[in-house]
Image (tube, rainbow, N blue to C red; front, side, top):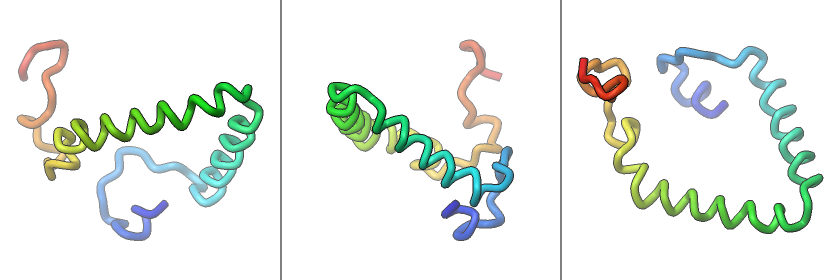
Length: 86
């Protein structure tokens, strides 16, 4: 939703229809599902979220195409398919 306002000309292979209806309904649905979890799952989820954030900021962010500023249309920068460089 933010990128549609900040960078409306960005190439997007897929756009969600009715974004301003679908996104809030999905958020509300996730909150309802989270509230219905058993208490132990509610306590564990933030811990795994913290682990994920640590991994992202320690490794993945600097190795991602977005983090390195690589355009996804560059053929030579795409990872090899099934171990074969094209």
